[in-house]
Figure 1 (cartoon, protein in one colour):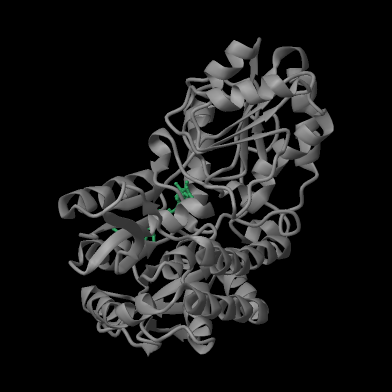
Figure 2 (cartoon, helix red, strand yellow):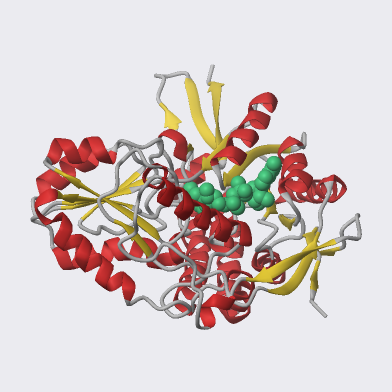
Length: 473
Ligand code: NAD
């Protein structure tokens, strides 16, 4: 019998009003997994009511007191890592290193925001004598955090930690395919001392839970991570209601490699775009732009490493059946458009990987930039490569995309690397593998969305600034 997971509302498990549950799937075996509550607007109403009731007392606490609770939540995630990893593995099939990284980052989100919360204050504004004017960072109230299936726990914590830090309450709506780790996180947080009602999780499909949540009159802000169409739809609800929304959407991010790069490291970076989470990463650098003089040699080295990646060891399966089908459709379209993969281009059809939703790591070398495979986000282990002639050509190709989430530049000429970094339209640019961490703001240019997660910027996203002025006369 599959385990049934209920919502988490008001500090306890809460059965769905519908009485119905949704199946999940283990993408490694294609066998059914646990079931999650099929939420509805009645469940959303209960969760928002619990959040609204709990939030004012939380907001009145000092930063130091909230910080202490968030540290306890971080400790609880750390102590519960094995169970969280197992829940995540069961519905995503991720490999162990990836699972561990996800839980470690989740802990780190709570530690970081528990820490910086204590140093983020309003400011005083000098208007001359006779007036005392200052600003306060105030919470919105109830925040909706709607997340996708590719990094379920990590993406939930990325929104929850800063939202809670500044004194909000949250109703989280995880992807219906991967809800169990977020539910368990809420239980752990409650047991660790987060007051009941501050973190509620309502599971179910987007139209039944996400839409009524975004439209609920007591929800004052939306943080969304997911696809462009859903982001556009939720932004229209937010626009109608005049509430702010943060949109973390997709990408088709470039990795630009000049001939004078440290090529070994650049090869490893190029390969990581397909190996990491099997390419199901919004920031994956899946457009490999290489200086023409080394393009063929560089791509051959990438293909060589990619062909040695092992399914289930180095990378996991596609997390959902529809994503698996979507990648195969991309292969079919690429073939219709005349593209032939240098490696991969199919699902596994033999060995243990054939039982799961595994796609062969794939490289399309020297593709035409107008092909669908070169322009659209595939969200699978698929690289496309294109040669460029010089710096200006590299910049034009890097920016030749509707998206703008991230770019990676590799060059032995550091000034050139930084020149490109400043001119590429993307929210994050790494040069020669520079680190992007919880401290570095993340967010899109162009169709990759707006608003910023991570870093100090996220604290300000989840707070609204109030000016208060007192006449001293
Ligand atoms: P999705 O947009 O289908 O779903 C995301 C979330 O929105 C899920 O919880 C889903 O149930 C909910 N949802 C779906 N339809 C809804 C509706 N009509 N109303 C309200 N809520 C609704 O995306 P997905 O398929 O889960 O995730 C894959 C996409 O997310 C990819 O395109 C990827 O690039 C993007 N993504 C972006 C980031 C980022 O940080 N920028 C991170 C991960 C994924």
